[in-house]
Figure 1 (spheres, rainbow, N blue to C red):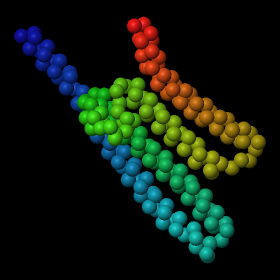
Figure 2: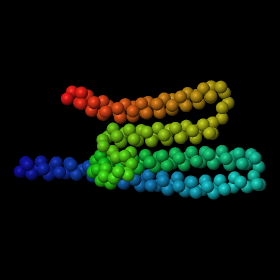
Figure 3: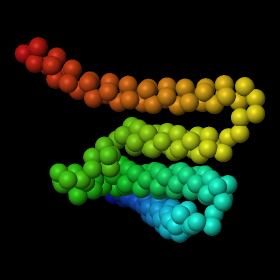
Length: 192
């Protein structure tokens, strides 16, 4: 009798992981919504950019249209990156809690960035895309930044230096993780 209740409880406990499907579907739908919004922004941006060659535009108006277009392009890139975060998050949760995605593991043509083996893989991939979003956001703010005092330029330079440092650490950590399995394999060969 106790075995029956134990199996029943463990089965219910194990199947409770399917609640993650709400986060998977929600993240996927949010990603699709952001992809849609960014794509609509691209169409509207293209429509506005068509006026750039208008001979009736003054130099100031052309410059304002140019600056506005560049700023909107950065916003579109930001939107696509955010949508990518949602997609990676959705796929990662599904692979970690529900099941491996056969097409992702079996196909040689599929991107390995979407294959999530553990929570560290998911965190690493999300962190890289979030870092890119932060870089794009800094670039967007830099386009609209008005330097009025010398200290503003110092702050701007410091922000660029910090971003460069974050990118360096990200790539250094990635290189270290790729080297470790090779070193372990070489150590095993040396021992035999």
